[in-house]
Image 1: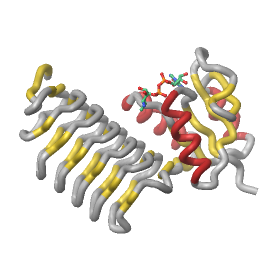
Image 2: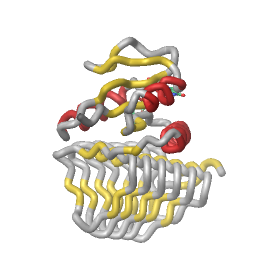
Image 3: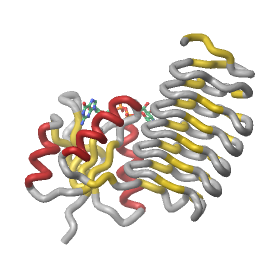
Image 4: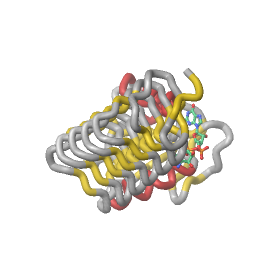
Length: 208
Ligand code: JB2
Protein backbone atom coordinates (compact mmCIF):
# COMPACT_ATOMS: atom_id res chain seq x y z
CA UNK A 1 0.00 0.00 0.00
CA UNK A 2 1.26 3.50 -0.83
CA UNK A 3 2.34 5.35 2.29
CA UNK A 4 0.91 8.76 3.12
CA UNK A 5 2.45 12.12 2.32
CA UNK A 6 5.01 13.75 4.61
CA UNK A 7 4.26 17.46 4.97
CA UNK A 8 6.85 20.05 5.95
CA UNK A 9 5.30 22.80 8.09
CA UNK A 10 2.45 22.70 10.58
CA UNK A 11 1.08 26.25 10.59
CA UNK A 12 -1.78 28.00 8.84
CA UNK A 13 -0.64 27.14 5.33
CA UNK A 14 -0.24 23.48 6.31
CA UNK A 15 -3.86 23.36 7.52
CA UNK A 16 -5.10 24.53 4.12
CA UNK A 17 -2.80 22.12 2.26
CA UNK A 18 -3.82 19.13 4.44
CA UNK A 19 -7.46 19.77 3.54
CA UNK A 20 -6.55 20.18 -0.16
CA UNK A 21 -4.72 16.86 -0.20
CA UNK A 22 -7.52 15.14 1.72
CA UNK A 23 -10.05 16.52 -0.79
CA UNK A 24 -7.92 14.85 -3.50
CA UNK A 25 -8.28 11.53 -1.66
CA UNK A 26 -4.73 11.61 -0.27
CA UNK A 27 -3.57 10.94 3.29
CA UNK A 28 -1.07 13.17 5.08
CA UNK A 29 0.82 10.84 7.43
CA UNK A 30 2.91 13.38 9.36
CA UNK A 31 3.80 17.05 9.47
CA UNK A 32 7.38 17.99 10.28
CA UNK A 33 7.84 21.40 11.86
CA UNK A 34 10.10 23.48 14.05
CA UNK A 35 10.41 23.04 17.82
CA UNK A 36 7.58 25.57 18.30
CA UNK A 37 4.97 23.30 16.72
CA UNK A 38 1.93 21.83 18.50
CA UNK A 39 1.59 18.02 18.60
CA UNK A 40 -1.10 17.98 15.90
CA UNK A 41 -1.99 20.08 12.87
CA UNK A 42 -5.72 19.51 12.27
CA UNK A 43 -5.88 15.69 12.52
CA UNK A 44 -2.25 15.04 11.52
CA UNK A 45 0.51 14.21 14.07
CA UNK A 46 3.43 16.67 14.09
CA UNK A 47 7.09 15.69 14.48
CA UNK A 48 9.74 18.28 15.38
CA UNK A 49 12.99 18.75 13.46
CA UNK A 50 13.97 18.24 9.83
CA UNK A 51 16.09 15.19 10.71
CA UNK A 52 12.71 13.39 10.82
CA UNK A 53 12.52 13.71 7.03
CA UNK A 54 15.48 11.35 6.52
CA UNK A 55 14.17 8.95 9.17
CA UNK A 56 10.75 8.69 7.49
CA UNK A 57 12.43 8.18 4.09
CA UNK A 58 14.30 5.21 5.63
CA UNK A 59 10.91 3.89 6.80
CA UNK A 60 9.66 3.92 3.20
CA UNK A 61 7.84 7.25 2.97
CA UNK A 62 8.48 8.52 -0.54
CA UNK A 63 6.15 11.50 -1.17
CA UNK A 64 6.47 14.95 0.39
CA UNK A 65 4.82 18.36 0.25
CA UNK A 66 6.28 21.62 1.58
CA UNK A 67 3.48 23.68 3.17
CA UNK A 68 5.32 26.78 4.35
CA UNK A 69 4.44 30.26 3.11
CA UNK A 70 7.95 31.76 3.33
CA UNK A 71 9.29 31.43 -0.24
CA UNK A 72 13.00 30.96 0.47
CA UNK A 73 12.42 28.41 3.23
CA UNK A 74 9.92 26.51 1.06
CA UNK A 75 12.44 26.40 -1.79
CA UNK A 76 15.24 25.20 0.52
CA UNK A 77 13.15 22.49 2.18
CA UNK A 78 11.85 21.31 -1.22
CA UNK A 79 15.43 20.91 -2.50
CA UNK A 80 16.31 19.03 0.70
CA UNK A 81 13.37 16.62 0.26
CA UNK A 82 14.34 15.95 -3.38
CA UNK A 83 17.91 15.28 -2.32
CA UNK A 84 16.66 12.66 0.15
CA UNK A 85 14.82 10.93 -2.70
CA UNK A 86 11.29 12.15 -2.07
CA UNK A 87 8.87 12.90 -4.90
CA UNK A 88 7.19 16.31 -4.43
CA UNK A 89 3.42 16.00 -4.92
CA UNK A 90 1.01 18.74 -5.98
CA UNK A 91 -1.92 19.92 -3.85
CA UNK A 92 -4.64 21.16 -6.20
CA UNK A 93 -8.12 21.92 -4.95
CA UNK A 94 -10.93 20.12 -6.79
CA UNK A 95 -12.52 23.59 -6.79
CA UNK A 96 -9.66 25.19 -8.76
CA UNK A 97 -9.89 25.49 -12.54
CA UNK A 98 -6.67 24.51 -14.26
CA UNK A 99 -6.41 24.51 -18.05
CA UNK A 100 -5.42 21.20 -19.63
CA UNK A 101 -2.74 23.11 -21.57
CA UNK A 102 -1.17 24.66 -18.45
CA UNK A 103 2.21 23.19 -17.49
CA UNK A 104 2.56 22.54 -13.77
CA UNK A 105 5.76 21.91 -11.84
CA UNK A 106 6.17 19.73 -8.73
CA UNK A 107 5.27 20.57 -5.16
CA UNK A 108 2.84 23.33 -6.12
CA UNK A 109 -0.33 24.38 -4.29
CA UNK A 110 -3.40 25.66 -6.14
CA UNK A 111 -6.18 26.66 -3.74
CA UNK A 112 -9.95 26.72 -4.09
CA UNK A 113 -11.34 29.26 -6.53
CA UNK A 114 -8.02 29.78 -8.30
CA UNK A 115 -7.95 29.78 -12.10
CA UNK A 116 -4.92 28.92 -14.24
CA UNK A 117 -5.66 29.53 -17.90
CA UNK A 118 -4.38 28.20 -21.22
CA UNK A 119 -0.65 27.68 -21.75
CA UNK A 120 0.30 29.15 -18.36
CA UNK A 121 3.41 27.74 -16.67
CA UNK A 122 3.59 27.30 -12.88
CA UNK A 123 7.05 26.59 -11.46
CA UNK A 124 8.00 24.05 -8.79
CA UNK A 125 6.97 24.81 -5.19
CA UNK A 126 4.83 27.80 -6.18
CA UNK A 127 1.57 28.76 -4.45
CA UNK A 128 -1.47 29.99 -6.40
CA UNK A 129 -3.58 30.98 -3.43
CA UNK A 130 -7.34 31.17 -2.89
CA UNK A 131 -9.24 32.83 -5.71
CA UNK A 132 -6.14 34.04 -7.59
CA UNK A 133 -6.36 34.12 -11.38
CA UNK A 134 -3.40 33.47 -13.68
CA UNK A 135 -4.38 34.10 -17.28
CA UNK A 136 -3.16 32.63 -20.56
CA UNK A 137 0.57 32.36 -21.28
CA UNK A 138 1.66 33.61 -17.84
CA UNK A 139 4.97 32.20 -16.64
CA UNK A 140 5.29 31.94 -12.84
CA UNK A 141 8.75 30.91 -11.62
CA UNK A 142 9.66 28.46 -8.86
CA UNK A 143 8.92 29.04 -5.16
CA UNK A 144 6.79 32.11 -5.89
CA UNK A 145 3.55 32.98 -4.10
CA UNK A 146 0.53 34.55 -5.80
CA UNK A 147 -1.60 35.50 -2.78
CA UNK A 148 -5.40 35.29 -2.49
CA UNK A 149 -7.48 37.23 -5.02
CA UNK A 150 -4.56 38.37 -7.18
CA UNK A 151 -5.43 38.86 -10.84
CA UNK A 152 -2.71 38.39 -13.45
CA UNK A 153 -3.70 39.24 -17.02
CA UNK A 154 -2.25 37.35 -19.99
CA UNK A 155 1.48 36.99 -20.73
CA UNK A 156 2.69 38.14 -17.29
CA UNK A 157 5.93 36.64 -16.00
CA UNK A 158 6.86 36.41 -12.32
CA UNK A 159 10.40 35.46 -11.31
CA UNK A 160 11.57 32.80 -8.87
CA UNK A 161 10.81 33.51 -5.23
CA UNK A 162 8.62 36.55 -5.85
CA UNK A 163 5.56 37.38 -3.74
CA UNK A 164 2.43 39.15 -4.98
CA UNK A 165 0.43 40.34 -1.96
CA UNK A 166 -3.28 39.80 -1.50
CA UNK A 167 -5.42 41.40 -4.19
CA UNK A 168 -2.58 42.58 -6.45
CA UNK A 169 -3.42 43.15 -10.09
CA UNK A 170 -1.04 42.98 -13.07
CA UNK A 171 -1.79 44.22 -16.60
CA UNK A 172 -0.91 42.10 -19.66
CA UNK A 173 2.68 41.41 -20.65
CA UNK A 174 4.36 42.72 -17.48
CA UNK A 175 7.68 41.22 -16.29
CA UNK A 176 8.18 40.95 -12.53
CA UNK A 177 11.74 39.94 -11.62
CA UNK A 178 13.13 37.36 -9.19
CA UNK A 179 12.81 37.81 -5.43
CA UNK A 180 10.46 40.79 -5.79
CA UNK A 181 7.41 41.78 -3.77
CA UNK A 182 4.21 43.57 -4.74
CA UNK A 183 2.39 45.00 -1.72
CA UNK A 184 -1.24 44.08 -1.05
CA UNK A 185 -3.65 45.69 -3.49
CA UNK A 186 -0.88 46.94 -5.77
CA UNK A 187 -1.69 47.54 -9.42
CA UNK A 188 1.33 46.75 -11.58
CA UNK A 189 1.43 48.61 -14.91
CA UNK A 190 5.24 48.69 -15.42
CA UNK A 191 7.91 45.97 -15.23
CA UNK A 192 9.47 45.38 -11.78
CA UNK A 193 13.19 44.59 -11.55
CA UNK A 194 14.72 41.71 -9.57
CA UNK A 195 14.75 42.11 -5.78
CA UNK A 196 12.41 45.11 -5.79
CA UNK A 197 9.43 45.87 -3.55
CA UNK A 198 6.71 47.87 -5.26
CA UNK A 199 3.52 49.17 -3.67
CA UNK A 200 0.50 51.26 -4.49
CA UNK A 201 -1.79 52.13 -7.38
CA UNK A 202 -0.03 52.21 -9.73
CA UNK A 203 2.69 50.15 -8.02
CA UNK A 204 5.99 52.03 -7.61
CA UNK A 205 9.32 50.67 -6.29
CA UNK A 206 10.13 51.53 -2.67
CA UNK A 207 13.29 49.39 -2.27
CA UNK A 208 15.82 47.69 -4.50
O1 JB2 B 1 13.11 24.94 9.14
C1 JB2 B 1 11.94 24.57 9.26
C2 JB2 B 1 10.90 25.40 9.74
N1 JB2 B 1 10.85 26.71 10.14
C3 JB2 B 1 9.55 26.96 10.47
N2 JB2 B 1 11.59 23.27 8.94
C4 JB2 B 1 10.31 22.80 9.07
N3 JB2 B 1 10.04 21.52 8.76
N4 JB2 B 1 9.30 23.59 9.51
C5 JB2 B 1 9.60 24.86 9.83
N5 JB2 B 1 8.82 25.83 10.29
C6 JB2 B 1 7.38 25.65 10.53
O2 JB2 B 1 6.66 26.40 9.57
C7 JB2 B 1 6.90 26.15 11.87
O3 JB2 B 1 7.19 25.21 12.89
C8 JB2 B 1 5.39 26.28 11.58
O4 JB2 B 1 4.76 25.02 11.72
C9 JB2 B 1 5.36 26.68 10.10
C10 JB2 B 1 5.07 28.16 9.89
O5 JB2 B 1 3.74 28.38 10.29
P1 JB2 B 1 3.01 29.81 10.18
O6 JB2 B 1 1.60 29.61 10.58
O7 JB2 B 1 3.83 30.82 10.92
O8 JB2 B 1 3.15 30.20 8.66
P2 JB2 B 1 2.68 29.40 7.36
O9 JB2 B 1 3.88 29.29 6.51
O10 JB2 B 1 1.94 28.17 7.71
O11 JB2 B 1 1.62 30.39 6.71
C11 JB2 B 1 2.00 31.66 6.20
O12 JB2 B 1 1.92 31.65 4.78
C12 JB2 B 1 0.61 31.34 4.28
C13 JB2 B 1 0.69 31.26 2.77
C14 JB2 B 1 1.03 32.71 6.77
O13 JB2 B 1 1.44 33.99 6.37
C15 JB2 B 1 -0.38 32.43 6.30
O14 JB2 B 1 -1.28 33.43 6.77
C16 JB2 B 1 -0.41 32.37 4.77
N6 JB2 B 1 -1.75 32.03 4.31
